[in-house]
Image (cartoon, rainbow, N blue to C red):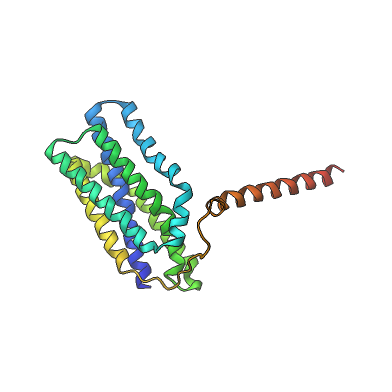
Length: 224
């Protein structure tokens, strides 16, 4: 399936780019500050966007063309890493700028992660979805493992080299997504409301209550 193959390659390149960039940012920040505390804030800056965008990202992913969302995220990430490379070469990059870059990249990742997975069933016939998901997950895990190692190795050539390569990866990933053809796409018609935004939390909470009640009933039967 051509579209799935292009999508898989693009996803793998995107994960490689993110992992390499995070390693280079961490090393560069430590070189600039010589502070373990400053390095720890990188993880916080990555985590904050995931928390902030937890609720809206699902609605954005379900209501709009996922290819456009992915392209936007990947190309913004490409621009961000290109600016990082330029700032490193020019010598004006600072720890605060690195934190801002991490926030931008983390925000793009917050939208990219929930958008990628649901696209797989739209790229292959229904009978091939399990195999496609296995390939998708394996490629993502492989890139997650090898990406930091590659980024650390290439850091020998300088952080600007890692940023430049990551920018190319994200640019190419966006171009690959551009030619992907979606076979099936269903968009919800109901308007956006507070209830719809919190529907996922409501479902999980209700499921936990039902499960807890059933467990208590089972316990009462066993004890009785």
